[in-house]
Each structure stands twice: as structure tokens, then as C-alpha cells.
Image 1 (spheres, rainbow, N blue to C red):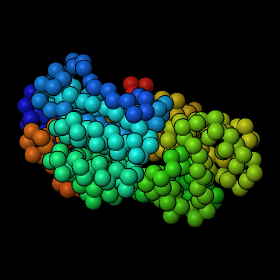
Image 2: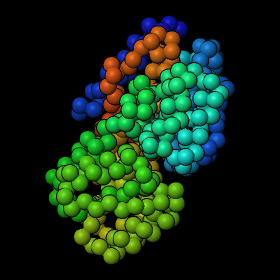
Image 3: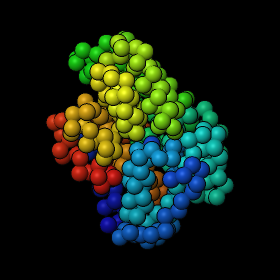
Length: 330
């Protein structure tokens, strides 16, 4: 595809698919620049360089999907992509400022800690560099000056999860927050609590799986009334499975997000369901939307966030979705 019209059609179609789904997270601080076209357009052939900055925690497979989507969009559009990440809010802000200083064409960034990133985002908009938000910050992106947003409504996602487990009899779910200060994770747990009043939040260090397992195991051994564990990321769900086994707990596990192991656990009945926000789509749309804005002045979403979730993955649809998790696109 070589024309902006064909790219626009492809993006519109992808956005429509996302809308239908709704109705039914590299090394810290390191920057990577895409050099290979991989069957797409030559990097830089569009003349645009896009910085893609996230709060990725090294080792979290969630971010592989976001990055994969961004890379594919960059290949499709002939964009030079500069990916960087750091889970520390102040360091992520520095990465955004570095992108501004290098005079990139546009910036796509997660907004998980809006207050800490506000100054850097303002520096970008003051420099007339367009910014789009993705994955986190749905309620704050406009205030910060981002033009568009691609991600899930996390409050709605939490409510949906809470309502589903409430129907199954949940009374005392444990909602596991694996990154302190994340507005997205807090919103998910608040949503669960709105449907199940007995929801209890538990803070863990998501960068240390062994610590997550031991914290969960201790909690489950001490409190036998916990009947559901709601994890907010796929690697934490794997930790929860280990903790429930070690504590001999009967608590059921549900999770947000997917990877191949979690998808297999859903198929095997070890995890009740996953709430998928389709991170590959988030990465793809963030880059493509900036390309279309720079080239053609397009505003994807018409001033409203483009929702990529929530979408339930359970025993009814896992057979169809499982192969895509192995391709790193779901």
C-alpha cells in the first residue's frame, strides 16, 4: 500500500474491528531504532521519525505485543521508529524530553503517571511535536495535550470483570496491583470493587516474580476467605497460580491481558478468563495515527479515545485466539 488513502482505509477498518470487539506492558531506559524494513516500506521513506516511549518493565511479555504492533505500523508506513522505555516515571519523562530534544516528527507515549509526565509532554506540544497517548491515561490525555488516545477504558474493564465474578459468587476478591502509582491499575481495581464490595487491593512488586509469589502465598495462607484473585497482568497471573498451589488455596484466578502461557492456562481451565485490551492494536494505531496526522491532518477517533478493549477471552473463544498469542499479536 503506497497511498495515504489506502492506509487510511486500512486504519479505519482496523478501528472498526476494535469497536466491534468492545461492544461484545527491552531493557529499561534503552532506545531502539528500527533499521530493517522486514518486507514493508524502507525505514524513513516517509520522512517521519516517531518516538515510542513506554513504562515497560523489563521481562513483561505484555509489552512485546505493543512493540510488535508499533514496529509493524512503522514498516507499513515507512516510518523510522525509536522505541525506549523505563518503568520509573521520572526516567520515562526524561525519555520523552530526549525525543523532543532530538526533534522527532511525533511522539507516542503511555501516560500511566500523568502528573510526572506532564512537563515533558508540554515540552513536546510547545515544540509543535504531535503527541498521542496509548495504553494508560485515558482520562488525562487531553489535559496533558495529547491529540489522540488508543487503549481500554480501564474502569469499564474492571467493572466488567467484577460483574462476571459476582455472578459466579465472588465475595472477597483480591485485586493485585503490581506497579505503584499506575492510574490504569487503580482504575481496574476500583471497577472490580464497584461490582464486588468485598474487593481488597494488594500491592506487590511486579518486577520481582519471586516476591509476588511469596506475598500472595502469605496472604492466601493467612486469609482463607479470599475466593478470587484478580491479577492485572499476565506474568502476575502465572505468579498467582504458583501461590494458590503453594498455599493450598481454592481461590480462582482471573486476569487482565494475555500471553501464550496464560492463553494455554485458560484453555486448560486453570484460569477462569482474561480481559484482553489488544495491545498489538494499541501499538499499531498509535504509530499509524501519527503518520496520518503528519501526512494528512487526520484525527482518528474524532476527539474521543479509540477503545481497544475490554474483550473477554475464555473457554468459549480460546481455541480461536490461542494461535495468535503464539504469533505475539494477541
